Length: 193
Ligand code: HEM
Ligand code: HEM
Image 1 (cartoon, protein in one colour):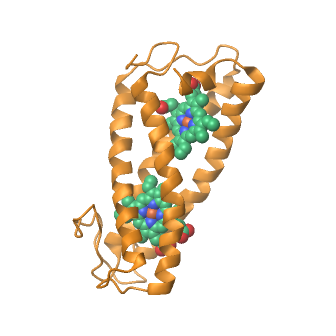
Image 2 (cartoon, helix red, strand yellow):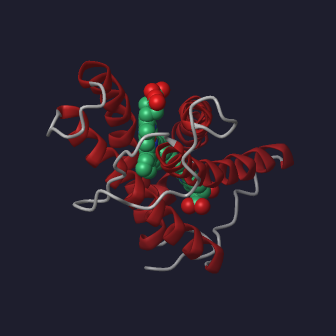
Image 3 (cartoon, helix red, strand yellow):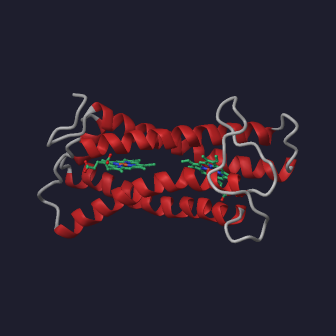
């Protein structure tokens, strides 16, 4: 079934959910790798350095991630949402809803903060999307030390990682609890529908 039903997630929602997860699994180590590579090569972007190739991959995947999340969110808002298990307490449902919406917010702020950091950078620096190396900025380029400079947005980008790790921990513990302790079908309906 493509669409969601009252009982379960359809193929589209499930594909969005797991594709997002796979992209995050690639983007996080790639982000750290890129930052490490920068320490070695610095801003030698005239050359085809490991840092430049990592940037190209990280930016491109980040933009694809943003497009994916926007598509996912519009699908989510148009679709019915499977009912939550009646056995859950009011407090558990509220926590689940809060976690899910916090994820959506995070999935938008994450790529936007990375994009904004590069836009704010005081030097002319490439922002890649596949072969295109001059994606326009979303905030003005300012000197280091200005209020909304590179560091400001890069710090938000880094906070996303810490906040996201906490949220994911909570989410995965809850999913496994449903799957192996409660065995109430909540994990199955995101896996097999
Ligand atoms: C969902 C998408 C993204 C994820 C999960 C992600 C993840 C990460 C991670 C884990 C780091 C290393 C953070 C650290 O040093 O503490 C990083 C760094 C960085 N990312 Fe992303 N990123 C995403 C999208 C983007 C996009 C779209 C751009 C730009 C177009 C971008 C630009 C950057 C930059 C400039 C840094 C270096 C920040 C610094 O100064 O340390 N990211 N990213
Ligand atoms: C980057 C990682 C992840 C993100 C951002 C994420 C996000 C979300 C969101 C927003 C929902 C709400 C449903 C929706 O609107 O589509 C959801 C549901 C769900 N997620 Fe994840 N998730 C992630 C990883 C995981 C992992 C690793 C597992 C399993 C171990 C998991 C298991 C589930 C389950 C079982 C549901 C269904 C809840 C229900 O049916 O009420 N998720 N996830």
